[in-house]
Image (tube, rainbow, N blue to C red; front, side, top):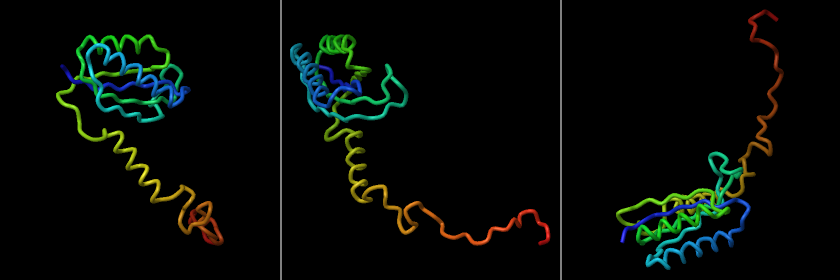
Length: 147
């Protein structure tokens, strides 16, 4: 059977638990039509590059699928009918990747960096507002005139 990677975006105002229910619903559709779903990744709530159906953010989810084309067509048909799904994309691949996806790796790397730096309030020894200190007497010497 052909291999697919499928990503879909769900509305920002549904909960993470509802996104998991959507994933399970579409997984059941695939398995009901003699397919199988491998890796499932919920990438969480992310900003969109532009508004999609009046949403600025969306829940992203990835599924690795091994199924006949009819199963993919049925899952996509149900996604078109669902008001919770904003966009979806299914791509046929030669082989599924091992380990976490690039997006999941990026998120883990960002989480580690945030832990190393602490909160963003730490600005070194410049003070709370990043002041440059007293700049002294500021005469207008730029005009080149004698004073």
